[in-house]
Image (cartoon, rainbow, N blue to C red):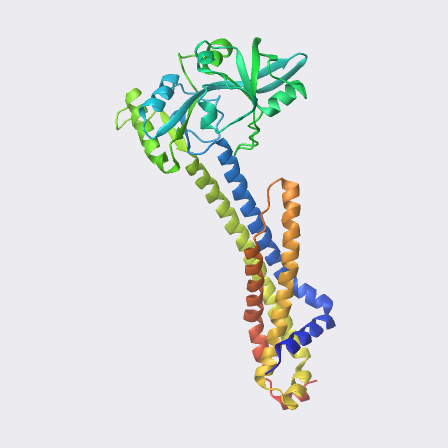
Length: 409
């Protein structure tokens, strides 16, 4: 039986004898493995990014929106129906055992002025419960109090993007900004949250007490109307129970019968994450199919070139058999050459795939998580392609008759 080390050495000698042909033969394997590495890295990075963005909104979070259907990501200030009130939010917080906190929201995008600077941002009225619901901490300053909420105090909390756009490096606490020509005192700056799942800057925002937004800044067409209610369940496993309790409570409060369509909708972040993951899995499957086709094409290329190699080296095979080589030795030699060819292509594909993942991450701004197991599996898969597609040419070489091979011109 041929020594594997000698077989690999002979295989590399054969590759070096036709370098350009070998490189072109490996191209399909290189592209296939490269696509697998980039696909897995970008897919894993995208899942991590989506998970991070959704977690940045808050854990155990449930969203109650007005209307029978509320699509996640719809602007909280753009609801066209008026079915939720601050009383609903208060009732959810008090009467739903699975709910920890509930925070109503009312706001819109408007112009904010400080000195000779102005900035267009979202101004949202809410309660003090909003910030623990969103798990949003202060960078410095303080939150507004219950008394400030009750008397519609002219105070505000600002996100880092909004305050930097208005004041630059100036210390903001105690400064007065104007919203809808109403002077508002900055009492706190929120920690940075980054982008939302929609890609919006969560730090480009200003928060004021709910009644301040409703009565001093924007007004409401209906008394105590709110645009949404954010709810925090007591634990992740209690989210389904909390959703059930919210649906039952609001149905009673809004006098909605069992057969009637609800005038509100309840969504949780688990559903949103699952929807995003399903979409990502579909895209990953499509990219995986492209990679599989590339590997198949690469395997066919290897089979083709190995058949050509068998034809070119027929006399060499005859000489080896004449001096004592067995059919199994010839089979092993050509099979080793096919595997070396495919694995070399796999290694090139891994290197280019890692480089491509980092380049894609830098250009797109998405994280790319390199998976070592993806590289190992891709390498073994490329070896499998070499064995599968190299077996027939190797078997054909091993079945040659020594006399006929020696006579071959």
